Length: 413
Image 1 (cartoon, rainbow, N blue to C red):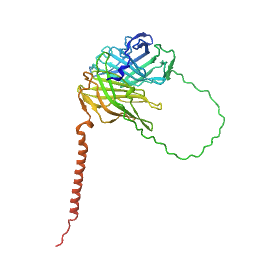
Image 2 (cartoon, helix red, strand yellow):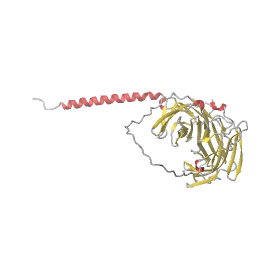
Image 3 (cartoon, rainbow, N blue to C red):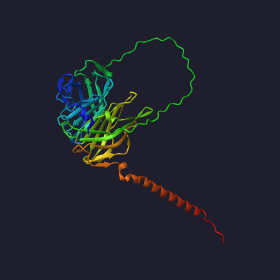
Image 4 (cartoon, rainbow, N blue to C red):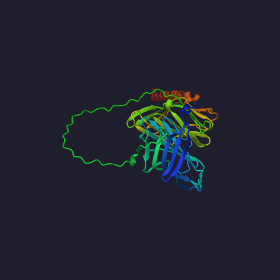
Protein backbone atom coordinates (compact mmCIF):
# COMPACT_ATOMS: atom_id res chain seq x y z
CA UNK A 1 0.00 0.00 0.00
CA UNK A 2 2.81 2.39 0.79
CA UNK A 3 4.34 3.53 -2.46
CA UNK A 4 7.65 4.85 -1.24
CA UNK A 5 8.54 1.83 0.87
CA UNK A 6 10.14 0.20 -2.17
CA UNK A 7 12.93 2.73 -2.42
CA UNK A 8 13.46 3.95 1.13
CA UNK A 9 16.84 2.78 2.34
CA UNK A 10 16.80 1.23 5.76
CA UNK A 11 19.68 2.71 7.66
CA UNK A 12 22.21 1.21 9.94
CA UNK A 13 23.00 2.83 13.26
CA UNK A 14 25.22 5.87 12.97
CA UNK A 15 28.61 6.29 14.57
CA UNK A 16 28.54 8.84 17.39
CA UNK A 17 31.42 10.83 18.92
CA UNK A 18 31.47 13.47 21.62
CA UNK A 19 33.74 16.34 20.62
CA UNK A 20 34.64 19.45 22.57
CA UNK A 21 32.68 21.57 20.14
CA UNK A 22 29.59 19.38 19.76
CA UNK A 23 28.27 15.98 18.76
CA UNK A 24 29.29 14.31 15.52
CA UNK A 25 26.99 11.75 13.96
CA UNK A 26 27.18 9.79 10.73
CA UNK A 27 24.37 7.86 9.06
CA UNK A 28 25.00 5.05 6.59
CA UNK A 29 22.60 3.69 3.98
CA UNK A 30 21.68 0.09 3.25
CA UNK A 31 24.98 -0.38 1.40
CA UNK A 32 26.88 0.85 4.47
CA UNK A 33 27.90 4.06 2.69
CA UNK A 34 27.84 7.45 4.37
CA UNK A 35 24.68 9.36 3.38
CA UNK A 36 24.34 12.03 6.12
CA UNK A 37 27.03 13.74 8.17
CA UNK A 38 26.50 16.21 11.02
CA UNK A 39 28.66 17.88 13.63
CA UNK A 40 26.75 20.39 15.73
CA UNK A 41 25.94 21.84 19.13
CA UNK A 42 22.31 22.27 20.19
CA UNK A 43 20.98 23.80 23.41
CA UNK A 44 17.35 23.76 24.53
CA UNK A 45 15.30 25.89 26.92
CA UNK A 46 11.90 24.26 27.55
CA UNK A 47 9.20 25.69 29.86
CA UNK A 48 6.97 23.22 31.71
CA UNK A 49 4.48 22.99 34.58
CA UNK A 50 5.46 21.45 37.92
CA UNK A 51 3.27 19.34 40.18
CA UNK A 52 2.83 22.26 42.61
CA UNK A 53 1.28 24.37 39.77
CA UNK A 54 4.37 26.52 39.39
CA UNK A 55 6.31 27.03 36.16
CA UNK A 56 9.91 26.09 35.48
CA UNK A 57 12.31 26.06 32.54
CA UNK A 58 14.54 23.10 31.75
CA UNK A 59 17.83 24.03 30.10
CA UNK A 60 19.90 21.22 28.57
CA UNK A 61 22.04 20.41 25.57
CA UNK A 62 22.32 17.63 23.05
CA UNK A 63 24.29 14.99 25.01
CA UNK A 64 27.04 12.68 23.86
CA UNK A 65 24.99 9.50 24.22
CA UNK A 66 22.77 9.66 21.13
CA UNK A 67 21.67 7.34 18.34
CA UNK A 68 20.45 7.92 14.78
CA UNK A 69 17.85 5.15 14.62
CA UNK A 70 14.99 6.12 12.33
CA UNK A 71 17.09 8.31 10.01
CA UNK A 72 16.38 7.95 6.30
CA UNK A 73 18.18 8.63 3.02
CA UNK A 74 16.30 8.90 -0.28
CA UNK A 75 17.37 10.35 -3.63
CA UNK A 76 15.54 13.64 -3.09
CA UNK A 77 14.62 13.64 0.60
CA UNK A 78 16.52 12.68 3.74
CA UNK A 79 15.94 12.85 7.47
CA UNK A 80 18.52 12.98 10.24
CA UNK A 81 16.97 11.75 13.49
CA UNK A 82 18.91 12.02 16.75
CA UNK A 83 17.55 10.13 19.78
CA UNK A 84 18.59 10.78 23.37
CA UNK A 85 17.02 9.99 26.76
CA UNK A 86 13.52 9.43 25.39
CA UNK A 87 13.68 12.63 23.32
CA UNK A 88 14.19 13.05 19.56
CA UNK A 89 15.57 15.87 17.40
CA UNK A 90 15.22 15.50 13.63
CA UNK A 91 15.84 17.51 10.46
CA UNK A 92 14.10 16.93 7.13
CA UNK A 93 16.10 17.78 4.00
CA UNK A 94 14.95 18.07 0.38
CA UNK A 95 17.06 18.21 -2.77
CA UNK A 96 15.94 20.31 -5.74
CA UNK A 97 18.25 20.45 -8.73
CA UNK A 98 21.77 21.32 -7.60
CA UNK A 99 20.82 22.65 -4.16
CA UNK A 100 19.29 21.29 -0.98
CA UNK A 101 17.75 22.77 2.16
CA UNK A 102 16.49 21.86 5.62
CA UNK A 103 12.71 22.15 5.61
CA UNK A 104 11.64 21.33 9.15
CA UNK A 105 13.31 20.67 12.49
CA UNK A 106 11.14 18.57 14.81
CA UNK A 107 11.89 18.33 18.54
CA UNK A 108 9.95 15.86 20.72
CA UNK A 109 10.62 15.89 24.44
CA UNK A 110 9.29 13.57 27.12
CA UNK A 111 8.21 15.16 30.40
CA UNK A 112 8.61 11.73 32.01
CA UNK A 113 12.39 12.31 32.00
CA UNK A 114 12.57 13.58 35.58
CA UNK A 115 16.31 14.15 35.34
CA UNK A 116 15.61 16.89 32.79
CA UNK A 117 12.12 17.90 33.96
CA UNK A 118 12.16 17.43 37.76
CA UNK A 119 8.75 17.33 39.44
CA UNK A 120 6.91 17.76 36.12
CA UNK A 121 3.14 17.55 36.50
CA UNK A 122 2.78 15.47 33.31
CA UNK A 123 4.47 12.51 31.67
CA UNK A 124 3.34 13.46 28.18
CA UNK A 125 5.58 13.66 25.13
CA UNK A 126 5.38 17.09 23.52
CA UNK A 127 6.36 18.01 19.96
CA UNK A 128 7.36 21.36 18.49
CA UNK A 129 8.55 22.24 15.00
CA UNK A 130 11.00 24.90 13.87
CA UNK A 131 11.65 26.49 10.48
CA UNK A 132 15.44 26.61 10.05
CA UNK A 133 17.26 29.11 7.86
CA UNK A 134 19.29 26.43 6.09
CA UNK A 135 18.62 27.03 2.40
CA UNK A 136 20.37 27.06 -0.96
CA UNK A 137 23.12 24.63 0.11
CA UNK A 138 25.05 23.60 -2.98
CA UNK A 139 24.91 19.88 -3.67
CA UNK A 140 28.03 17.94 -2.62
CA UNK A 141 29.03 20.62 -0.10
CA UNK A 142 28.77 20.85 3.68
CA UNK A 143 26.60 23.52 5.27
CA UNK A 144 28.67 25.44 7.83
CA UNK A 145 27.48 27.94 10.44
CA UNK A 146 29.67 28.81 13.42
CA UNK A 147 27.41 31.67 14.53
CA UNK A 148 24.70 31.09 17.11
CA UNK A 149 21.15 30.82 15.77
CA UNK A 150 18.30 30.84 18.29
CA UNK A 151 14.79 30.06 17.09
CA UNK A 152 11.57 29.70 19.09
CA UNK A 153 8.44 27.61 18.72
CA UNK A 154 5.63 27.39 21.29
CA UNK A 155 7.89 29.09 23.89
CA UNK A 156 10.60 26.44 23.38
CA UNK A 157 13.99 27.97 22.53
CA UNK A 158 16.55 26.08 20.47
CA UNK A 159 20.07 27.38 19.86
CA UNK A 160 22.38 25.89 17.21
CA UNK A 161 25.99 26.78 16.60
CA UNK A 162 29.23 25.27 15.30
CA UNK A 163 27.13 23.44 12.71
CA UNK A 164 28.78 21.41 9.97
CA UNK A 165 26.27 19.27 8.15
CA UNK A 166 25.90 17.49 4.81
CA UNK A 167 22.85 15.71 3.48
CA UNK A 168 22.86 13.72 0.22
CA UNK A 169 26.49 12.63 0.54
CA UNK A 170 27.86 11.35 -2.77
CA UNK A 171 30.07 8.28 -3.12
CA UNK A 172 30.11 7.71 0.64
CA UNK A 173 32.58 10.53 1.37
CA UNK A 174 31.96 13.83 3.15
CA UNK A 175 32.74 16.85 0.99
CA UNK A 176 35.56 19.22 1.89
CA UNK A 177 33.76 22.10 0.17
CA UNK A 178 31.67 24.49 2.27
CA UNK A 179 28.48 26.50 1.85
CA UNK A 180 28.58 29.08 4.66
CA UNK A 181 25.53 30.56 6.36
CA UNK A 182 24.86 34.26 5.93
CA UNK A 183 25.80 35.05 9.53
CA UNK A 184 29.34 33.74 8.94
CA UNK A 185 29.94 35.81 5.81
CA UNK A 186 31.55 39.13 6.78
CA UNK A 187 29.87 42.23 5.47
CA UNK A 188 31.96 44.11 2.95
CA UNK A 189 31.84 47.82 2.33
CA UNK A 190 32.19 48.73 -1.34
CA UNK A 191 34.92 51.28 -2.10
CA UNK A 192 33.70 54.82 -2.66
CA UNK A 193 33.18 55.78 -6.26
CA UNK A 194 32.85 59.08 -8.00
CA UNK A 195 30.35 59.74 -10.70
CA UNK A 196 30.44 62.36 -13.38
CA UNK A 197 27.40 64.60 -13.56
CA UNK A 198 24.77 63.15 -15.80
CA UNK A 199 21.71 64.57 -17.43
CA UNK A 200 18.60 62.47 -17.35
CA UNK A 201 15.75 62.99 -19.74
CA UNK A 202 12.42 61.74 -18.48
CA UNK A 203 9.94 60.88 -21.17
CA UNK A 204 6.29 61.56 -20.50
CA UNK A 205 4.39 58.52 -19.41
CA UNK A 206 0.78 57.59 -19.53
CA UNK A 207 -1.01 55.81 -16.69
CA UNK A 208 -1.22 52.07 -17.12
CA UNK A 209 -3.49 49.54 -15.50
CA UNK A 210 -1.60 46.89 -13.50
CA UNK A 211 -1.99 43.50 -15.13
CA UNK A 212 -4.06 40.98 -13.25
CA UNK A 213 -3.02 37.39 -12.83
CA UNK A 214 -5.91 34.99 -13.51
CA UNK A 215 -6.44 32.16 -11.10
CA UNK A 216 -4.80 29.10 -12.67
CA UNK A 217 -6.92 26.11 -13.57
CA UNK A 218 -5.28 22.88 -12.47
CA UNK A 219 -6.33 19.28 -13.01
CA UNK A 220 -7.58 17.38 -9.99
CA UNK A 221 -4.53 16.20 -8.02
CA UNK A 222 -3.74 12.51 -7.95
CA UNK A 223 -4.83 10.51 -4.91
CA UNK A 224 -1.86 9.43 -2.80
CA UNK A 225 -1.82 6.61 -0.29
CA UNK A 226 0.53 7.20 2.64
CA UNK A 227 1.46 5.02 5.59
CA UNK A 228 3.65 5.47 8.67
CA UNK A 229 5.32 2.42 10.15
CA UNK A 230 7.64 2.35 13.15
CA UNK A 231 10.84 0.43 12.63
CA UNK A 232 10.11 -3.30 12.47
CA UNK A 233 6.47 -2.61 13.27
CA UNK A 234 3.04 -2.50 11.66
CA UNK A 235 1.27 0.54 10.27
CA UNK A 236 0.24 3.09 12.90
CA UNK A 237 -1.00 5.91 10.62
CA UNK A 238 -2.91 5.73 7.34
CA UNK A 239 -3.78 8.58 4.99
CA UNK A 240 -5.26 8.76 1.53
CA UNK A 241 -6.09 11.98 -0.33
CA UNK A 242 -5.39 14.37 -3.17
CA UNK A 243 -4.09 17.75 -2.10
CA UNK A 244 -3.78 21.21 -3.59
CA UNK A 245 -2.60 24.45 -1.98
CA UNK A 246 -3.62 27.99 -2.84
CA UNK A 247 -0.84 30.46 -2.11
CA UNK A 248 -0.94 34.24 -1.94
CA UNK A 249 2.45 35.82 -2.59
CA UNK A 250 2.14 39.59 -2.37
CA UNK A 251 -0.66 40.55 -4.72
CA UNK A 252 -0.44 37.32 -6.72
CA UNK A 253 -2.33 34.11 -6.09
CA UNK A 254 -1.35 30.72 -7.43
CA UNK A 255 -2.21 27.09 -6.85
CA UNK A 256 0.01 24.00 -6.69
CA UNK A 257 -0.91 20.32 -6.62
CA UNK A 258 0.92 17.82 -4.45
CA UNK A 259 2.32 15.28 -6.91
CA UNK A 260 1.44 11.92 -5.37
CA UNK A 261 3.81 10.13 -7.78
CA UNK A 262 6.91 11.88 -6.42
CA UNK A 263 5.86 12.26 -2.77
CA UNK A 264 7.49 10.23 -0.03
CA UNK A 265 5.98 9.83 3.43
CA UNK A 266 7.46 9.47 6.89
CA UNK A 267 6.40 10.35 10.42
CA UNK A 268 5.84 8.89 13.84
CA UNK A 269 3.02 7.74 16.10
CA UNK A 270 2.54 8.47 19.77
CA UNK A 271 -0.09 7.98 22.42
CA UNK A 272 -1.41 11.55 22.22
CA UNK A 273 0.25 12.88 19.09
CA UNK A 274 1.05 11.49 15.63
CA UNK A 275 2.81 13.09 12.67
CA UNK A 276 2.72 12.61 8.92
CA UNK A 277 5.49 14.25 6.87
CA UNK A 278 5.08 14.42 3.08
CA UNK A 279 7.97 15.49 0.85
CA UNK A 280 7.67 16.08 -2.89
CA UNK A 281 9.84 17.86 -5.45
CA UNK A 282 8.15 21.19 -4.71
CA UNK A 283 6.96 21.14 -1.10
CA UNK A 284 7.27 19.59 2.35
CA UNK A 285 4.21 19.22 4.56
CA UNK A 286 3.99 18.20 8.20
CA UNK A 287 0.56 17.27 9.61
CA UNK A 288 0.27 16.85 13.38
CA UNK A 289 -2.71 14.99 14.85
CA UNK A 290 -3.69 14.98 18.54
CA UNK A 291 -6.34 13.21 20.60
CA UNK A 292 -8.17 13.90 23.85
CA UNK A 293 -8.70 10.20 24.67
CA UNK A 294 -12.08 10.24 22.88
CA UNK A 295 -11.58 12.01 19.55
CA UNK A 296 -8.71 12.97 17.29
CA UNK A 297 -8.26 15.96 14.99
CA UNK A 298 -5.67 17.70 12.85
CA UNK A 299 -4.09 20.27 15.16
CA UNK A 300 -1.14 21.67 13.23
CA UNK A 301 0.04 22.02 9.65
CA UNK A 302 3.43 23.29 8.52
CA UNK A 303 4.28 23.64 4.85
CA UNK A 304 7.41 24.88 3.09
CA UNK A 305 8.28 24.82 -0.56
CA UNK A 306 9.32 26.61 -3.70
CA UNK A 307 7.13 27.86 -6.52
CA UNK A 308 7.85 27.29 -10.19
CA UNK A 309 9.40 30.76 -10.35
CA UNK A 310 11.81 29.90 -7.51
CA UNK A 311 10.08 31.82 -4.69
CA UNK A 312 10.53 30.05 -1.32
CA UNK A 313 7.48 30.06 0.98
CA UNK A 314 6.67 28.84 4.48
CA UNK A 315 3.24 28.84 6.15
CA UNK A 316 1.93 27.16 9.30
CA UNK A 317 -0.93 26.99 11.79
CA UNK A 318 -0.65 25.18 15.13
CA UNK A 319 -4.20 25.84 16.32
CA UNK A 320 -6.38 23.88 13.91
CA UNK A 321 -9.37 21.67 14.68
CA UNK A 322 -10.01 19.77 11.45
CA UNK A 323 -10.86 16.20 10.39
CA UNK A 324 -12.31 15.20 13.75
CA UNK A 325 -13.43 11.64 14.42
CA UNK A 326 -13.69 9.21 17.31
CA UNK A 327 -10.62 7.25 18.34
CA UNK A 328 -10.74 3.85 16.72
CA UNK A 329 -12.45 5.26 13.63
CA UNK A 330 -11.20 7.00 10.50
CA UNK A 331 -12.24 10.38 9.09
CA UNK A 332 -13.51 10.50 5.50
CA UNK A 333 -14.62 13.28 3.16
CA UNK A 334 -14.89 12.41 -0.53
CA UNK A 335 -16.21 15.81 -1.58
CA UNK A 336 -13.73 18.57 -2.39
CA UNK A 337 -13.08 20.67 0.73
CA UNK A 338 -11.12 23.87 1.24
CA UNK A 339 -9.68 25.20 4.48
CA UNK A 340 -8.12 28.57 5.30
CA UNK A 341 -4.86 27.70 7.07
CA UNK A 342 -3.41 31.21 7.22
CA UNK A 343 -3.88 34.57 5.55
CA UNK A 344 -1.72 33.36 2.66
CA UNK A 345 -2.52 29.64 2.50
CA UNK A 346 -5.63 27.68 1.54
CA UNK A 347 -5.72 23.89 1.60
CA UNK A 348 -7.89 21.88 -0.83
CA UNK A 349 -8.51 18.16 -0.26
CA UNK A 350 -10.00 15.49 -2.54
CA UNK A 351 -11.20 11.99 -1.56
CA UNK A 352 -9.78 12.44 1.92
CA UNK A 353 -9.46 9.63 4.45
CA UNK A 354 -7.15 9.59 7.47
CA UNK A 355 -6.59 7.55 10.60
CA UNK A 356 -3.67 8.65 12.82
CA UNK A 357 -4.48 6.42 15.83
CA UNK A 358 -5.71 2.90 16.51
CA UNK A 359 -4.85 1.36 13.13
CA UNK A 360 -5.38 -2.41 13.06
CA UNK A 361 -4.17 -4.87 10.42
CA UNK A 362 -2.98 -1.95 8.25
CA UNK A 363 -6.51 -1.09 7.07
CA UNK A 364 -8.81 1.84 7.77
CA UNK A 365 -11.39 1.42 10.52
CA UNK A 366 -15.05 2.37 10.03
CA UNK A 367 -15.25 5.90 8.68
CA UNK A 368 -16.98 8.91 10.18
CA UNK A 369 -18.12 10.93 7.18
CA UNK A 370 -17.97 14.67 6.81
CA UNK A 371 -21.29 16.50 6.54
CA UNK A 372 -21.01 16.94 2.77
CA UNK A 373 -20.78 13.17 2.32
CA UNK A 374 -23.62 12.33 4.71
CA UNK A 375 -27.18 11.51 3.70
CA UNK A 376 -28.37 14.62 5.55
CA UNK A 377 -26.52 17.03 3.29
CA UNK A 378 -29.39 17.05 0.78
CA UNK A 379 -31.68 18.48 3.47
CA UNK A 380 -29.88 21.81 3.43
CA UNK A 381 -31.25 23.07 0.08
CA UNK A 382 -34.68 21.64 0.97
CA UNK A 383 -34.69 23.48 4.29
CA UNK A 384 -33.64 26.68 2.56
CA UNK A 385 -36.41 26.26 -0.04
CA UNK A 386 -39.07 25.65 2.65
CA UNK A 387 -37.90 28.70 4.62
CA UNK A 388 -38.06 30.91 1.52
CA UNK A 389 -41.55 29.62 0.64
CA UNK A 390 -42.77 30.34 4.17
CA UNK A 391 -41.28 33.84 3.99
CA UNK A 392 -43.04 34.53 0.68
CA UNK A 393 -46.40 33.39 2.09
CA UNK A 394 -45.86 35.51 5.20
CA UNK A 395 -45.08 38.61 3.12
CA UNK A 396 -48.16 38.01 0.93
CA UNK A 397 -50.46 37.66 3.96
CA UNK A 398 -49.03 40.82 5.50
CA UNK A 399 -49.61 42.67 2.21
CA UNK A 400 -53.25 41.56 1.99
CA UNK A 401 -53.97 42.51 5.59
CA UNK A 402 -52.35 45.89 5.10
CA UNK A 403 -54.32 46.52 1.94
CA UNK A 404 -57.64 45.62 3.60
CA UNK A 405 -56.99 48.02 6.47
CA UNK A 406 -56.11 50.81 4.06
CA UNK A 407 -59.56 50.45 2.42
CA UNK A 408 -61.45 50.68 5.73
CA UNK A 409 -62.92 54.23 6.36
CA UNK A 410 -66.16 56.14 6.72
CA UNK A 411 -69.01 54.23 5.08
CA UNK A 412 -72.03 55.95 3.43
CA UNK A 413 -75.40 55.96 5.23
